[in-house]
Amino acid sequence: MAECGRKALSLLEAARSRYESLQISDDVFGESGDDSSDNPFYSTSGDSDSDNYIAEVGEEEHPKHQHHQKRSDKESGQSWGAGGGSSGAGPPGSLSRSQAEEEGWTETLQDVTVPPYKETYGPAQKMPATATALDFFQLFVPDNCIQNMVVQTNMYAKKFQERFGSDEGWRPVTAQEIKAFLGFVTSTSVHRCESVLSIWSSGFFSNRSIALKMSQARFEKILKYFHIVAFRPSQGSNQGLYKIQPFLDSLQQSFSCTFRPSQTQVLHEPLIDEDPVFITTCTERELRKRKKRKFSLWVRQCTSTGFICQISVHLKEGQGTDGLATLKNKPQLHSLVAKQLCQNISGKNTIIFTGPSITSLSLFSEFSKQDIYCCGLLSTRKSDCTGLPQNMLVCGSTPAQRGQSRVMMKGSMSLISWYNKGHFRFLTNSYSPTKQGMIIKRKSGEIPCPLAVEAFAAHLSYICKYDDKYSKYFIFHKPNKTWQQVFWLSISIAINNAYILYKMSDAYTVKRYSRAQFGERLVKELLDLDDCSPTQ
Image 1 (cartoon, rainbow, N blue to C red):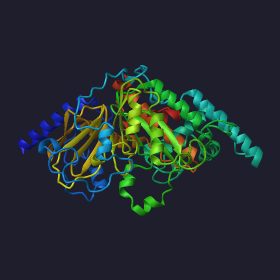
Image 2: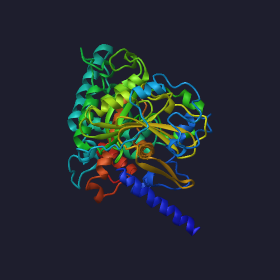
Image 3: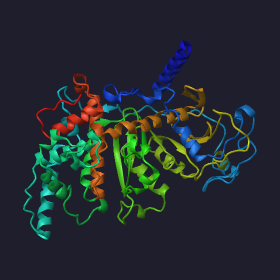
Image 4: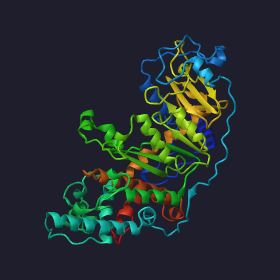
């Protein structure tokens, strides 16, 4: 037993050493409270799935391929494309062997080095040790933004009543009431209740401590008339999002001004539909019953801290420039999204990790001209495989060994095929194909892989694990209007970022609040309650 413990500890130390070299910082989010968990990359517990991210994807995408190429090309002396041929034609746009050779793809590998990062990452301004949760939140939703909500809500209420008749129960809203309104809705994330109106009920989710701050009737009046933009602009882009676009622009500017991300960042769609606990426990029928979102949201997120640096919202319906109807296919959409999310990081030598829907040779080549380096997972079903060698994208008939890999290069771009209970393919120009990495698992020990595979698994696993932490601020209030759904999701992201800045500030050394405690404190400060101490 003691020997097993020493072995687990040695694996843990090995993992820590390796992942520190990949620029992944220690977990600054779970040092206190009930969310105290180690960085998932460091975990070697038996029930940890932090290093199974790639394996799970592979098993889903290749359920029929149980036996593949047995030895690596280097070990067996076989030439590129050997191993018994391919199991079928490659994906659309892929190149035959002769075409790939003409395009410059070769088995001859060369070292690749990414220039040093041209930014220092961390908070852009120093917050005092006396800063409150509301102070951090208002870095993203300042008083002038609150005042705009007041003006637009009152304008909408006036216009609405001019058209449909007066509302005797209505009186103009104030800034203090808008803050309280935000606090009430935000409380649904802290107390995990789907209906904000349950605060005033006598049921399980009632909350008399905050219900006394505003009557339910007054809250419902504000909810009825609440607006960010009261009237449609005569011209301009993003017509479908006109009621929320000014707020999104303001939020994006504040994200850029308050925090500088690390060199490694990831483009992905965060978990925003539901609480992960609900997703894993509800039945398939219950999932089908839930109304589908009419928008998609993508983010660029710092992999060292979890700070969401930029968001991109696209409507799934509509004919405006922000609607998917203007795009021919999903790869075109995802390429556009990636370019939008990365428009402010050119020239900084940033390393971007991407999923299969974004990864493509043309996009990565375009990014490389802007000093943006990439590492992405490829899928023959989801990725644009145009310009990639066909024989690297299909499985050979010869079985493969776990940890075996093949690599081809074109300039500084590497196409990697790696086997671990299934074939996984990566496209990268940010990690040298000549350098080896290691996936460390408790049961199976060390699995050799190219360094790019290890880096991808580490950074993307962290983001997947981070969704569980971010979900603590997922606002459960579910409005019918799409712009309102986007607004409350944006508020959730702002609270997430506020907590990250809090954890990196001197204020955290004074009162070490967990995520849940920080959320409770923010709600009470928005409601201007005298007792702002968090519930223990």
